Image (tube, rainbow, N blue to C red; front, side, top):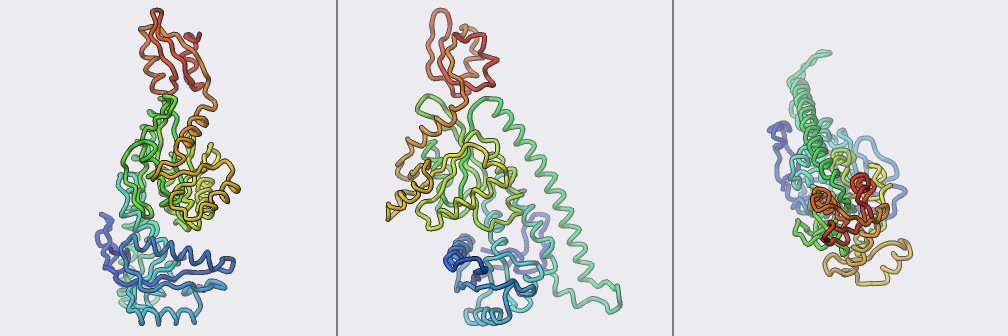
Length: 437
C-alpha cells in the first residue's frame, strides 16, 4: 500500500487525485500521551492506530508511547525524545514514521528534513483509508475535498528540493517559490470545482430523499463506532448481504434496506459511516451530507461493540459527533452488539446498570434481535394514530399510499368497500379523514 505525500512532486496527477507516491515497507508508530491522558488510554489509541495502519497493508516494525508534558513547536516532542526516535529509525531501517496525533505542516517538514523518511499522522492514515473505500460519487468527492484541504498547507513538503534555487536579493523569486504559488492556485481551483460538483450531487440526493419522505415510510439510521457491527446488524435485520468486513471503515457509503416488522409494518433502515476517535474534523465536515441521514431519521440505532474494552469510550465518541451534527435529539435505541464474543458475561450486567434501556444483541447469532425489532416498532409507532377505514373500491390510489406507509395492520375486502385497520402518521390524516369509521 502506498501512503500519500511520501515522494514528490505532490501535484503529479493532481487533477485525477492520484498523487505520486512511493511504497513504504517499515513503519514506526508513535503514540502521544498527553498530561491528562492515562497510560491505558494512550495504549488503546496506539493499538487503534496500529489497526488503521494495518488496513493500509503497511508493515509495522515498532510502536512506542511518548509522554508529553507540553507540545514542542518544532517537532511536537522534546529534543531528547526526538533523538530516541531517530535511533529507532536507524535501528529498524524504517521508512515511515506515523504519529498518533495531529502534526502541523511545519512539524511534518521538520521531521522529514531531520529523519530523511516519510512522516505522516493519524489524519493522513484515515484520509488514505477513506480514499480507498469510497465508492459512490458523493463519497469520492467528499474524500477528494478532505484530502486537498489537508494537503494544501503541506505542499512545500513536496518541493523542498527547489528551495535552494532562490535568488539572493530581497523579494527575489526562485523556481521553487513560483512552483509553490502555481501549485497552490491549482489546488484551490480544484477545491472550488469539487465543491461545486459535490453541491450538485448533494442536491440530487436531497431530491431523492424528498421523494422518499413524501412516502410516509418511517426511517431508521444505524450509527456507531467503526467496526461495531453496524453493517452486520443491517444484514441480519433486513436479510440482505451488504459488505460487512471485520475492519475499520469497511463501508463509507450509506446503504438503505427495507425492514419488515412483525406487525406487517415496514421501515427503511440506513447504515451510515462509522466514527473513530480523533477523526479529522475536515472529514466530519466532508461527510456531514452523508450523516444527514441520521439527522432526518425517525429513529437512531446507536450500535456499540460490547466485546471491545473501549466500549464506553466508543459510545461517547459517537455521541459527540451526533451532537455536533444535531442528530442527538432524535429518538435513539442503544444497542450493544457482539455479545457472542464476550468471554465474561458479567460485562453485560455492568452495561445494563449503566444503560438501563439498552438492548444486548448478536448480529451473528440473532440473539436479542426480536426484542430489538419490537422496540423499533414501538418507537416508530409513537405519534401514529390508530384508525379504521372503509375505502371505496375505486380508491386504490389511497390504498396504495397506505401500503407504502407500512402502517396497515388489517385489510379486508367487503361488498361496501375495502376495510382497513392501521396506524398512520398525522401527514396522512387529511387524505383518510373522509373514510374514517
